[in-house]
Image (cartoon, rainbow, N blue to C red; front, top):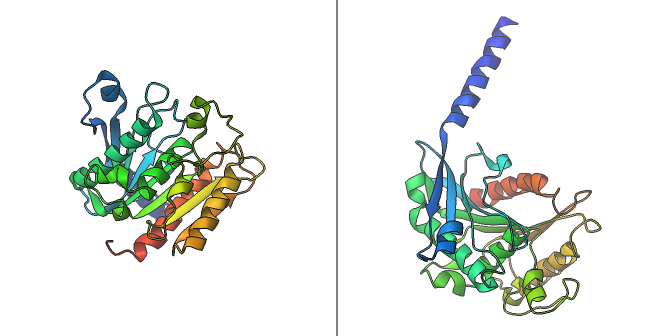
Amino acid sequence: MKKIQLTILVLCAVCLNIAAEYRTARDIEYSSNKDSYSRERCRMDIYHPADTAGLPVVIWFHGGGLTGGNRFIPEELKNSGYVIVAPGYRLMPKVGIGECIDDAAAAVAWTFNNIQKYGGDPSKIAVAGHSAGGYLTSMVGLERKWLKKYHIEADSIAALIPYSGQAITHYEQRRQQGISELQPAIDEYAPLAHIRKDAPPYIIITGDADMELYGRYEENAYMWRMMKLIGHPDVRIFKIDGHDHGAMVSPAHHILKSQLRRIFSNHSPR
């Protein structure tokens, strides 16, 4: 019994030591914009190991309907062998939807150019986010022009993992045009307008079809189907039954980690 107790204590000490090796660098400016609102919102926190290099990276965009929310490091992704990058971004209606997407692209580009300083591998950068963050994930990864502005190839992203993101034009953009959130529309600001078979691995996660926000599962199911039909070799969709738009986030993190293990085990730089 004493040996078992000693083993447990040693394992706990090891776990605590692993956790203690992670640090969080805060309030890092990633945008070249110098106006006060950009300097307020365009900052990121980076959760990273103290003395380890070459780790995979998850860029995590927060939700909030493109009108609210703040950056944070998801608890379920801590101590998991990842460098976590959590950017903020400017919000509507103070800026247009294009500025929101541009901020997301600037944050991704900054990560590619700087993440090695924090122990991350720039060839293993996944982009993910919930709701509005899932929408931004899809836009910067599918429409190449946003990252091309920053001299980054969108196909260098190792995986795109939107959680309950909009596949049609975001409802806040529609609302500003006088279109109801229940009236679907697809324009240049819809991920569905940018489907392509040569995009990075695309892992869609939603909540329960009957509990999701505004038919979010159905539009993502259509996105999945169109990506399959166009010939994308690695597009998958996961529906978390019994969980609504907010409750699906925690279990979705487990799917993210499982899928990244699969993707990175077969990974070769694109």
